[in-house]
Length: 370
Image (cartoon, rainbow, N blue to C red):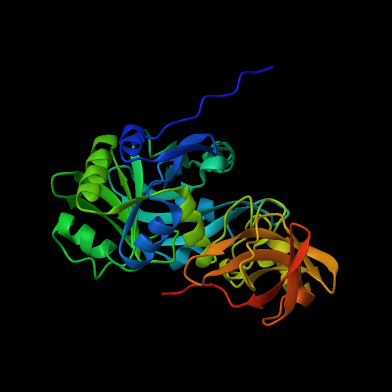
């Protein structure tokens, strides 16, 4: 029997331990699940600002004269709607229209020094190895180089209503002109350069920053010294669930199409370009997706969890894909996959929790919006 692979550690491992982070295995990495406590970290991000180490995520660089055209063949979203300094959220598809992974594509524009268009892709940690191998198999024959861009660097997420103010104090310039999904390289005083995108996974304003290991450590220490709350995976999950943001492997996977999981807005069938899985999505658009991902809010204090059965009229019809307690709504909330006939807003369903049927209503997503 093969020995288990040791867990990877981010460059901030020592700093996270020093800050009291409780470490757990996650997607092959040793990551902090919490520091001060999930509720305190959740509220910090909603009310002030929180800092997450997300260095487990993959960052790939695509280089080649036709990098955007080549990537376009793998995603259903029109990549030519964004230009240099802009980014978009999309999904990689298989030939059945299923989702290989979700990702953010950053367009860094044409590089005269390399005579190439440069794109950066931020991908999920659990999919990073498979994504990299598959992208190379698809893109390198077209002359597009696919390389790890993170190396031994640090990826941080600074999230919350005070995030812009905190970052402006370090870069010495206003970020009011940097729109959501905009990105640029900033020089942070006493720290170094950082590639910064106005992106996040919390439903708040915020930024994701890619830095060298030394600069990442310096920024982490500086933020904590200035009173920014370090946050772990636990708060990251409750924040993204309130914002109804999908988690790959739970709310979507290789067997589900974007149309079945509420990501139809990523599918741009009006563009003439072909992409993997297009025929499947065209047929599903015409016929209607048989299943839908809905938001559920429960009554009382019941807390739904991934995998719990969803019922209509006492009969099982689906399952919770993501669920938990919403600190903002003070209620149990869930994303759930159900037949399209049961997806209408206001529909009353039930979630089976420890043998009890707990009433749940189909509600509008996101559950929380600033």
